[in-house]
Image 1: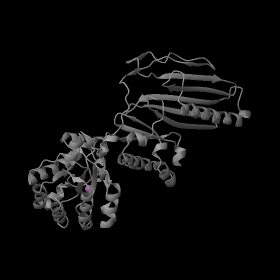
Image 2: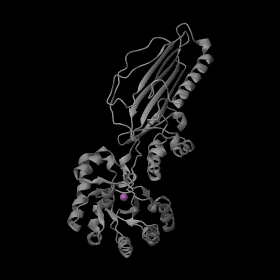
Image 3: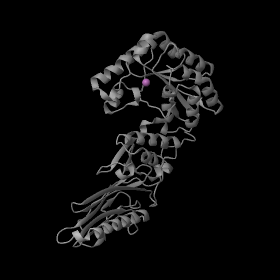
Image 4: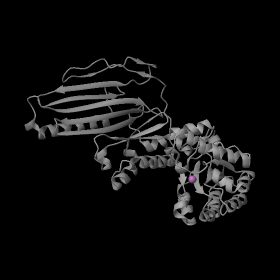
Length: 426
Ligand code: NI
């Protein structure tokens, strides 16, 4: 598609599989580069692993590193390792009176390397410092490099402000579970380019050190964000937006919403609850008759992640049956209540042949109950490919619509249903 803007900027790099064997350990105090045994293409870069070990009366060192150039380590990696050694030797010096005679401090640095998306390579370092029983400190540090051996910034790799924002939200949500210090968390979330991260397949993994989160915990915190979940990451390059209305149909609000959409000749998607379809079958039918898409939002709006598979399927099936019976439309998109998803929910959605669809712009209409606030949020956050979350159960949401539609039209947006958006994105 012309003007298509991919999720990930691709840097050309021949596809290859790394098969590496590390040929054994190197002796005390020695440094030696190990040679990779196999690579698919001769022009493709290899990975070189280096082991450094050292034993002294007061300490031991064991450092593994990897690089893409045979004798040239990435400068940032080099500097970081030097820094780790320096801080370790400071510790050794501090406790030197208690070391020796079999009592030693230890520094271990290990590395995992994997090829990432956009033809990058990630090096995940774990550093562990231990001074006998007294003190122990673990740290994680990730370097993601391009084939020119330069660091890649997360925001430049994604090249899509909305994707970055979605990831920030996802990471924040998950980090909150660790009960971090609020200020420390805000600070971290605001600086995605300083995160330790890697992308493997469709997953972004971000790694955080407990001290940066202001929490007391031995191990680092690892957060996984499925990139495909926030669908509008895959910006189609077309100026389209999908408005979605949840929790209806509702007698007091849905008719007004439909009138306004009709006036603008705009199509939207209504994620209906089976229970509501029961109450207003005529309205559900009107939504379908006027060309809008109907999505499944379960029968009774329970948190599906707290339920087992049979109950999840029942919740989905009940509303699905009602929607089909009343509107003749078979819902192909599914939005779980509260956006709460887990493996079970995803599997159940697959069972019914539905795509799980969340949103990328949350209007917070249910919270603000203020048309002006609703419009402000959307105007600020909307980009081509956005899926906007609204609820056709609040009067204020209907009141916000005329201004919203005027604005989006003026900005050149086309209104599409979620399924249309998905098919554009491919
Ligand atoms: Ni809902």
